[in-house]
Length: 219
Ligand code: B16
Ligand code: MG
Image 1: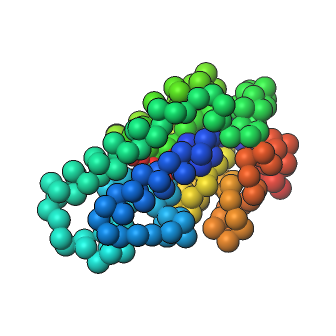
Image 2 (image 1 turned 90 degrees about the vertical axis):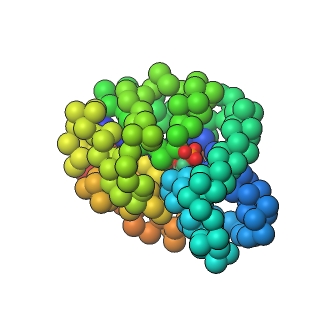
Image 3 (image 1 turned 60 degrees about the horizontal axis):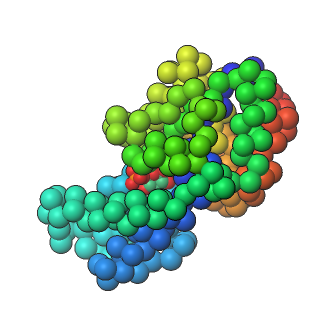
């Protein structure tokens, strides 16, 4: 029996995935390392530092910077990102999400958030959806980046629910892998190809149906 839903933030609750992309793209441009949306899939759900490492590796420049310089580059990306998220309002909650959260609540289940983003609290605040979440894991306290299951396991632990009674919702390949590694049921939002490891795939958040997902979980 399902007892809790655990949500990713960026790309599931709101489209900050687009803002992360734009912010990294700007930094990539400044470094002379251009990349496209296809490469960007590899950055989704991945921590800030790990994302930077992947971009530098793409440009074969991973050895050109000291640890301190890398910190400065990551901070620069975050400055671009923080600027972009000041524009977020409750209208930016993705289609169907509020209804989905309400349906979960109406059935008495717990709701947690497992985001890799250190900006998650700010974004949730700007969206005005904090009331739906029993717990939001603080990414700053998580040692291992997705696809490691740590952030999902921590959310389940704080909610007091066993992993096998949790359904995780993700838009990133690394995120779906993290959910599965945690021993949870995975719902993927995105293309069938990118979400190949998910138990249920929907093309967009508007298609998230409480009844269908719980039926698939029970099947
Ligand atoms: P920050 P999620 C992730 O959030 C993003 O998908 C990923 O692109 C980003 O690099 C990561 O958060 C860290 O974000 O720089 O704000 O700490 O999808 O796990 O909610
Ligand atoms: Mg995401």
